[in-house]
Image 1 (cartoon, rainbow, N blue to C red):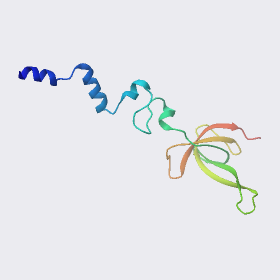
Image 2 (tube, one colour):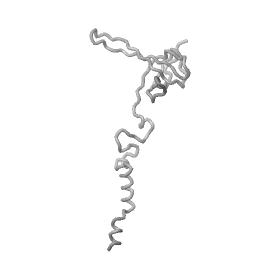
Image 3 (cartoon, helix red, strand yellow):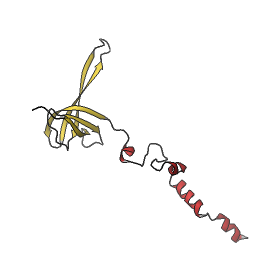
Image 4 (tube, rainbow, N blue to C red):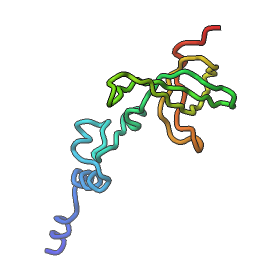
Length: 132
């Protein structure tokens, strides 16, 4: 009688897989969409899926006097609250440059992890070279 009870308590191979999947956090959603993690905010399919949508900006290189770093000036138009005219606002971003941009080039920068105290952007491409 005791042997029969022990056999009933031992999980079958299918039940063992389900127990492992539940213990590791995977659910039935993993079988339906294998690239998506069941936990919120996590995606396991592609590199871009894991990172999410990174902010991109297009600006003009204002300085290239540092090694592998450029200062990118990004202009934007903002409507003045009182006068209702468009006012140009400028922001300067320090960006990591492996591409080799020079002063006056129009470049696309993308948000990245902090690379130094002030550098959180990376030059992805040179959109337009500066006129010589």
